[in-house]
Structure formats: structure tokens, C-alpha cells
Length: 105
Image 1 (tube, rainbow, N blue to C red):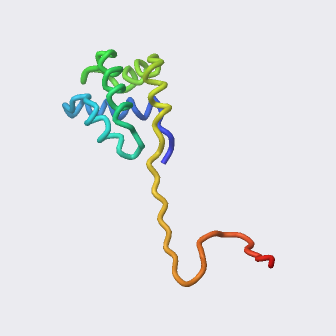
Image 2: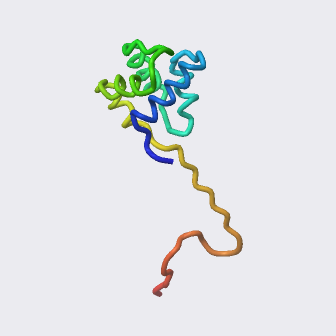
């Protein structure tokens, strides 16, 4: 999963508006579930997006331009990190640390 950019966010916002989904913190957080987003960041994004007066009649490129022009939104986007999960399966004895395990006595 890559870091989110203004262009990616504009696509998500465009889809939300086209489907009649209100740009609330809860809806934004739901749509950005592939990224780690704190509640405070989601609420700030809702506030900043409302300032842009976006509508379903705008194209994705217009939305992307408005997002990129907002310093506040750009700063909030930088706070989003990919939501990654590392899963390990370990069978047998030993540990899961790789590398040379020479033990000096």
C-alpha cells in the first residue's frame, strides 16, 4: 500500500460525492480504511473539505486541484500512513529472528 496523495484523495472524494455520500469524518475514515487515520485528523479533514465547497458537479481534476491548493489538507494527508499488518507463522522450535545466531559462551 502506497502513501496517499492528493490525487488519490481526490478520487475517493469524487466517488463519495458522485454516490451522494456526505463528507463527514466518519465517512471519510471509512473510505480511508486502508490508511491509518486518527479521529482528530478525520474531523480536521471534514472541516477543511467543507471549506472547499466541493460538489458532485465537479470533475475529479477540479477536486484534485482544490485539494492540492489547500495547505491544511496537504498537511493532513501527510499524516496518513498505510495500514499494514504483518502476519507470521512459526512452526517448530527456535525464534523468528533471522541472521547469524552464534552464541559466545
